[in-house]
View 1: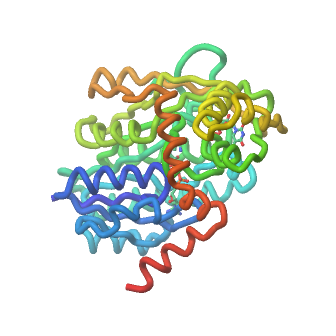
View 2: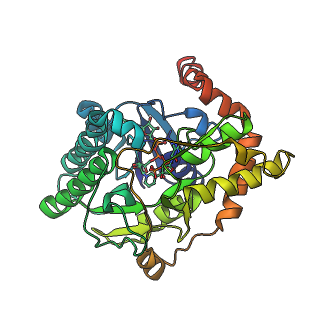
View 3: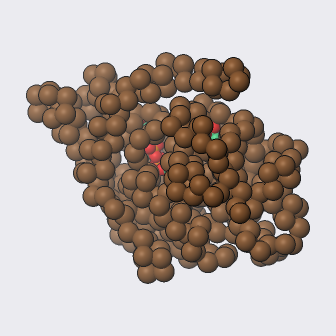
Length: 350
Ligand code: NAD
Ligand code: TYD
C-alpha cells in the first residue's frame, strides 16, 4: 500500500501528474498538498476530485507543523515534489519568494520525510521534480547531460539548483531514498497563461500583441506535459535510488519560429486569413540575464527505461491549441481571476 504526497498538484505539471497517478493506480492513496498560490487552480483537477483514492489539502510546504502532521496522519510512503514558484520573470521581480518555496519548502519536506521514516527506508521515496535550467545556458551546440556542472543564472534556476543540492545532500548524509528528474520546457493543457505558449494562444484569440523578448532567437527544448508525467511515472517505479534523469523532447525551437508556427496553426483553426496572427508579433525589451539555449540529452532515460517522447511538436501544439479553444471558460476564469473562487465553492460548502 502506497500513500503518496504530491506537492503542487493544482499547478500545471502537478495536475497532470496527479490525474495520471489517481487514475492509473487506484490502489495508491494520493494526497495533494497545494497552497493555491496564483498558479494553483483546482479546476485543473475537477474531473478526479471525487475519486476515493484522492484527497486535497490546502497548505504551504514551508509549514513544518502541517507537513509533519500530514506525514503522520496519512502515513506517507512517497513524495512527488512538484510545488514551486516556477516563472523566471517573477523570480527576477521577487527572488525571496523563490528561496522561500523552492529552497525552504523543499528542505522542510526532506526533513519531515527523514524524521517520519526514521531510517526505515524500505519502499520509501522522495522524488524531486526539477528543471534543465539548473545547468545554465548553452551556446549554439551541445546538450545538458546528467553530469553537466550546475550553472544557474536566474533567481528561479538558482533556487531550483539549491533544492536539487539539498535533495542530494539528504541522500548522501542520511541515505534518504531520492530520485531527481530535470526536464525541459513543458507545454500542454492547463498551462498558466503567463508562460510563452499559453500567453500567446490567449493573445491570438483576443487579437492582442504577442510580446517576444529581444530578437526571439533564444532556444527552448519543448516537451508535451503528458510525456513528462509518463517519464516521472517510469522513473518513480523503475528508476534507481539516488539517480538523476534528464527528460527532454529533442525538440529545439527559437521563440520566433515557435510563435510563427503557433500563428500559422491558429489562423487555420480560427478561419483567419493566413498571416493575420503574425502581424500581432511585437518585439519587446529582453528579459534580464535571458538564457540563450536549453537542450536536453535524454539518452539515459531512453536506454535505462525505454522512454521516448510520444508526440511530434507540431502535433502536440495542435492538440494544445485545440484544448485552449475548447476550454475558453477555463482560460477566461484564469485571466479574470475567478478561478480563485473554485476552492471556496468546492471545499467550503462541504
Ligand atoms: P506551476 O507554477 O504551474 O505550479 C506550481 C504549483 O505549486 C501551484 O499549484 C502552486 O499553488 C503550488 N505552490 C507554490 N508554492 C507553494 C507552497 N509554498 N506550498 C504549497 N504549494 C505551493 O508550476 P509547474 O510549471 O507545474 O512546475 C511544477 C514543477 O516542475 C516545478 O518544480 C518546476 O520547477 C518543474 N518544472 C517545470 C517545467 C515547466 O516547463 N513548467 C519544466 C521543468 C520542470
Ligand atoms: P517561459 O515560458 O517563461 O519559460 P522559461 O523562461 O522557463 O524557458 O519562456 C519561454 C521563452 O520565451 C523564454 O526564452 C522567454 C520567452 N518569452 C517571450 O519571448 N515572451 C513572453 O511573453 C514570455 C512569457 C516568454
